[in-house]
Image 1 (cartoon, rainbow, N blue to C red):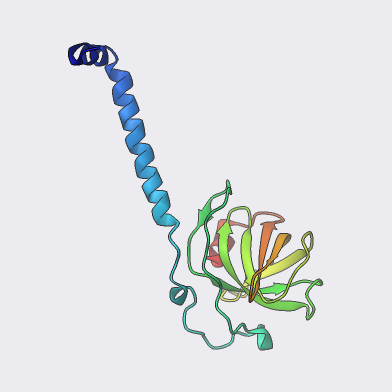
Image 2 (image 1 turned 90 degrees about the horizontal axis):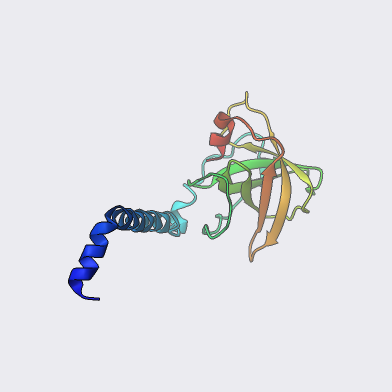
Length: 172
């Protein structure tokens, strides 16, 4: 096939060639944007300077920073990026009944929380952002996974009932 024959064939299929080229360009752009979103955050920017203790958290205030975030997963629900948000957790499965943690990953389906104690999968937790107004109550989540890390536990949760968007935004 000569160059002239090849160009004549392309002219006959011009809509297909243009569509294919546009598709490749769009997919390349989306892949670059996704790669930018998956960058690892600097640990020094994850936790702001420690504020004064909030009422209700007492002696359970955490003196550790949450781990770096990893975005390699197959989640289908919409995720929001953002800084870790300190939360108060309450459950009968916790030794003291309450504990503190940080929400490090959030989606419309659930939260990933880092904390210093383990929680058995299948149990329920009541969770509330420390900076939430008093008019906002606790949200119930179901523990789906609990993974031991060197200095903390990563707890994957699913909302029992998806809270309103205004409450979801309190988690970051």
